[in-house]
Length: 207
Image (cartoon, rainbow, N blue to C red; front, side):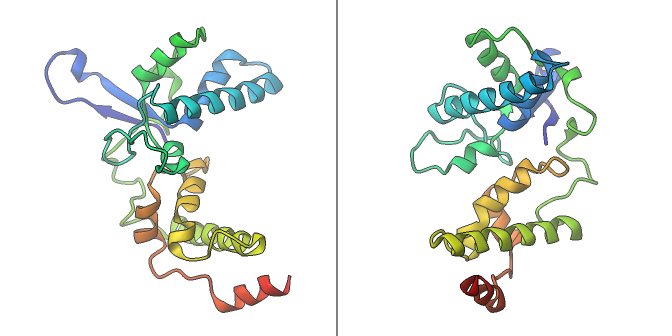
């Protein structure tokens, strides 16, 4: 989910809310502005924008920040793709990216819905240590599904370490939750105690 943060230092400009979003959210909002009344063109544009933005995040052309610490994500081939899927992009950097690619739209505060502009300290928002029963159950269903797919195709593994980054990606892409947590945090908190049970393994083996 996109966020609104209030900068605490210095000038009046610093006091303005600072917005952040993921590549998925950014591509959707940009496509909506480019093609507000054309669903087919909007869907095509969103795919192209997402692919280009992810490429530029990976290359360091757009600064990707860790969803929790806001520290830059290292530009290193060893960093998994999901780190860039869940990374936050500063709205100012995003508009610079739009200018660089000569895309004639700009995003601002009014492009973020109330649900997207939740402060980081919003008490009702699920957290890693208090995700709520619905999100906890959903994360474990995702883990079961990913482990099952890994076993069926013969690679990928079925442990918490094997599935946690894919679970994090699914949570990040969930239109309702859109919570951008890294895979290790998901493993430690949402998948703590989770295992792909023996019965499920046998079902996969028989299929």
